Length: 371
Image (cartoon, rainbow, N blue to C red):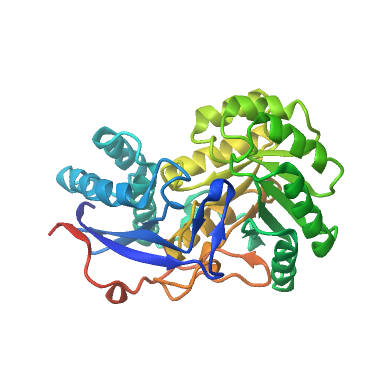
């Protein structure tokens, strides 16, 4: 089987609750997602999606994705790459462009979609098997006042959510007030992840950690922007500790685990270049006793489908929760599938990603590569 063409589409995603705010004054209302369709000489098509969270969250940004994807696709068409050989495709992309993990992820996921369709199997089966019929989801609460975040927490709990990620990273005292307000609103059985997105430097992070000691069922996530600061903070707190933005590959995962700097990681498929690398990191983390949140930076139905298959094939004891980001947006390319139910998610049963993209609704491609 050969990749003979690729179509690249724009697909804007509106945040369902209006405005999404994080540390450092980062706020978004709409994010430009990019969808890629790979076409093969055997008539099987595969879809992937890349949607970086704005221009300043990670190195990837929407304009970079849309510049990188045609170049990557042209290299694969020219090489007559077999999309079922995901490792070979990954090596070809790395030989074409350095970095550009989000763009490579969209193509890698599209290749897994093709592999599943060609084998007549859902992607989760190919990633190791369906280990969980369904799994818990979390929802992120944007940075706001303690009262506003408590109200948002109650609304999510009413929908069945039992894990909340709180966007923090402002003044430590104000952040501690946010956490305690949500804890009071949510009750003791709801897991809270206090996520500063690297918004504290070491002094404020130590202060925040001390203020949060004693809060039950709380995980401290990515408090500082650098690994050195996070590793140092780990020595000052007994709170369970998770890293996100700085765990970008197997090397950083292994380093953090060997240093005793993590109890958990946030494994974002797009940040590590796709399902191929994410699967390897997932398996390594599970072997090391490191638990995981499985998700992506942002996205719609295609990102959610990819997340669902990786989460479903993860050992239950290794998975904290996943995110279904198509619940977080108002725009859907595949009929709002897969769908969450009562705070839990599941991977589709159909071959490949198991969802049907409405290509006609996307309009004309931004770029068409090949015939």
